[in-house]
Image (tube, rainbow, N blue to C red; front, side, top):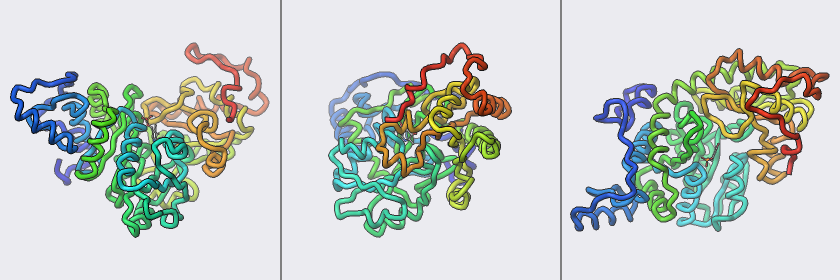
Length: 413
Ligand SMILES: *Cc1c(COP(=O)(O)O)cnc(C)c1O
């Protein structure tokens, strides 16, 4: 793709050269090796993290359908290369294992996705992690620090980190920076343009966009991609070719979906802010991060969070009462989801991290979809209700698909 094309065009055509609508899905787990010399050469190239020569050999080493998705994602992020994995956490694990080859210490900026926070805090991969604020990254770097990891917008309160500013601190010590770009997507934010070395995605979210494929991907330079590919071959966390096909297809409509969902999120964020049952709304273009949002992102995105008055029981009530909106974890799909971070996605993080990340008992996170915004607002309004009817379940008629459950499943750990 040439740099002159607009993103909407690039996203539709990336890695589709020579094709009409749809690339073939290659499901084979192995490939003919008609010439042993070629086979040996291909295996040797792939063992070094390179591309196959002549024959792909075996599906844990290379799959042509997944490769197309990688090329498309690399082009969307403005990267030289990309490497795809079976899930976002598999991608983050590979990134950390690659870092471990350079040094055993990680600097991580909180707040982070619950799974990432847990993986780092548990020490499972044999790495030591210093959790810090964006302002203190330089101070947290040690002689064996091999990676600075951050997420912006952060999960679940959408707080922003100034990527260029963290890169400036890390580059004083020659430490590469990885940015989890799951919430913003390359439509709204391109961390490599701001000096980051790695961009990580849970492609399960906005990139797929329809909630039907798990995947993770890292966009980076050619040499870093090689070691990430070697780790994928060694550990086996490959993306399934059907997933690769679906995520590649998802990229085509990503700009369109982000625009529609973001428009809805902006409306809902404004309406929620003046609702009497709401304590606080968290959205990148509102509050203390508004300036940074305008500078770093092309828009505030489609995820917001809000704190309801009345804490845990009030939040549980909202989750129980929504009808159009689905009470479920995950995000980035065409349908709107609501979830309770303290009880669900961030249950696993420590109480200290919950407090520092403002993950309170009344906090709900809303991943806004592309439905009609009036329908979404009506649904939220009835779910928020008025104080006196809040605890009378009898007044609510339940949709067939959602059976109310006892509140204690949301108990804070
Ligand atoms: C979901 C998510 C992940 C983990 O991705 P999986 O595909 O579920 O493994 C990592 N980071 C962020 C920001 C996420 O939202």
